[in-house]
Image (cartoon, rainbow, N blue to C red; front, side, top):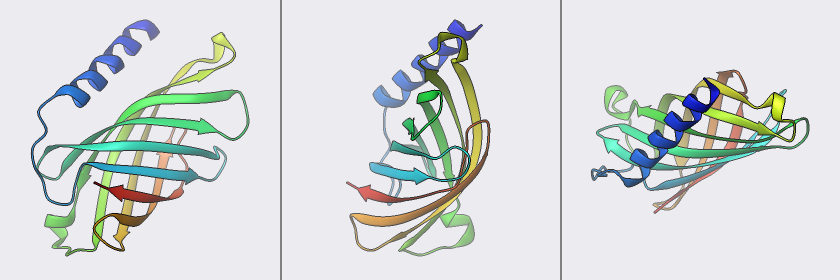
Length: 150
């Protein structure tokens, strides 16, 4: 079962990275780097690709500062609420889900994680923004980070 989930995750990542990307203003083509805090302190990064209006998909990596869980690789999907809330630049608000595999040095502790999150970003200019994100689930924690938009 675990191997099947890993194959499915790799397939989703392949589709996300190689599929057609639709042009969308202000969402996608963004590198987000977070420092996560709480019981699961870590650093994580994801790169967003726009797949539909107000929807992005991102490959994601996370490294813990301590503990048995060394690395998590996964994918996340986000829905941007900007149009629904009639938010103007420089604000973005989103919610989403992420799914990944936690890989540790102990082969018996490899596991799958599933989390939900909600976040917001304030963009200082066309390239830089500051992000606050909160979440819950298997390995989720709150985080603060930067968004780099290309």
